[in-house]
Image 1 (cartoon, helix red, strand yellow):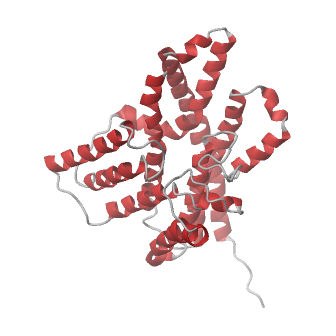
Image 2 (image 1 turned 90 degrees about the horizontal axis):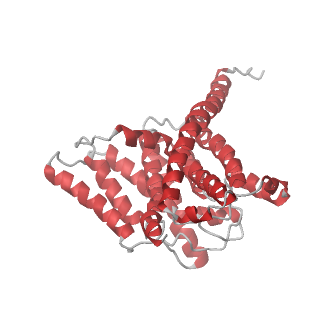
Amino acid sequence: MPTAEAIFRPGALGVDLFFLISGFIMVYTTMDCDGSFTYAARFWIKRLSRIWPVYVVLAIIGVQAYNLITVYADASLWVKMIKSFFFLPVDPYQPLYYGLPYGLGWTLNFEVYFYLVFGLSMLAGRRWRWLVFFGWIGFTLIALPLLTRGMVTLDVQHDYHYRISYLNQVVNPIIWTFALGVIAGLVYLSPIQMPDSMATRLFVVSAVTTAVWWAYSGMAMFHGIGEWGGPLAVAFVILAIATKTVELRIPSQLLWLGEVSFSLYLVHPIAQALITRTLNGIGRKDLTQTWSHVFATTIFALVLAAISHKLLEQRLAEYIKNKMLRAVRANQTISYPTPA
């Protein structure tokens, strides 16, 4: 289905958009950062508890959806699964996906790393947090590759081939996308703004249209600010500034999609695998290459996303988050005896 490939493949730029939004939201939601370890701990708990339980459950289901149940008898698979549960690369020399058993997990590897760096930078306090954050980004994405490999690249598939496995993930230029999201957040909180005018609206439309055209015209073919992410980041910053003065009305259906987007991202391969295996099982493999298959898998993915959002995000993840936050609060109230 070459037409479907042409239509849907650039849709993967949603990952770049997700990273931009993540950077933006982290800035916006930590405006009251006081630089304490307790604040950073609460930040890490809130972010990790939202991701980890949902990912672990859906990764286990997802791997099985593509294979027979006997796949879990393979001990080497569990080694890979455990690495992925700790957001570590399985094959550090295979960027951008790093050989994870459930392929979509690669985005969460970078997401969790970003949370780690962002949280540590908050420990520097309000005055120094951004210097520490951007200093680390500059060191790992520019200085370190330049000093050790004699080059810097925006190619997210480039393998710097460091012996330390995790370092290969740390220096991957896809992280620039998070940094640009942080910049968008800082610009949004700054006095910079645009007038509420038709010119502003046209400027926003032009920026968004250019980003979409850049992806679908073939000017860019993959992730990163050197490809899809560059024009998308520019459009994102412009949109962030414009929304300070221009009211944008978002349909309720899109708001709902935004709410379930994390679950939808993780369950859509499961929906595709289950429907494809079912059609193959009843001897209708021919239907797996039709638009009816696209329609069916999309609807099924939305259903699974709604279920996952309700059971895993709103219940399981919230339960774990609240338990961990209570533990932090309890630790704060413990009084230790003063040494004699």
